[in-house]
Image (cartoon, rainbow, N blue to C red; front, side):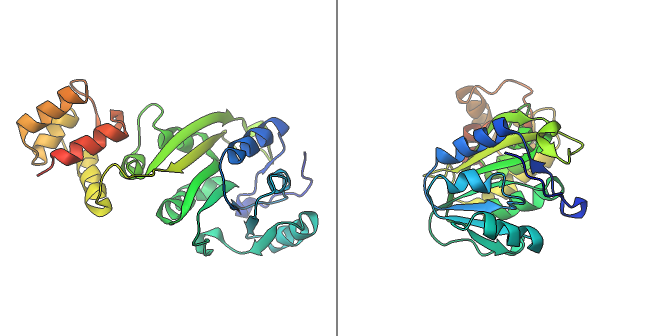
Length: 250
């Protein structure tokens, strides 16, 4: 399926034109359940097949000309003209989906992670952002701060040629799932803890943790039980290792 609507550079509009990627995206959404909120539907390359899933679908599009065309093209969807960063999301369980403008990826992810009620998200983002969020090659501080509440998974790389116009970098198909039970109870304290460890001084996470005030004996036991190699850096820890380290903190 191709869209012939030209994207606007200032809005970061790079539309999907690859049937393979569209099918993979829709398959990932089909594996979820509940109403769908699509972020930035553009010309409707994803909206049309998403509508075929037969689930309630709301599409939030910032460009009025595209929103108008999409209402005519997909009458079964509710198309809202507006900025997703300011859009009020449903207060019932729902699924988020979208090909995110690359230049707004971080802002949109922060909005998504702070939003309540959604259960899963299928997002097409910049390749390096997708890798960092999924912890491939090492997790970012942002990922570590949100891991106790969400699971991140990288499904595949999306070449720049899958878009029109083609962006300067590849994309990545990323999924997020809200955990049924958070791994730690306190969000504010945990996020501050992760920040302190990521920005602390030391030759490895164990030394950083001790310098941050954690008991040396307890940190050593944590490293043994969690099988954390000597010299491991904060980016090398997984979600459960982070949660276990947080429980060591006095």
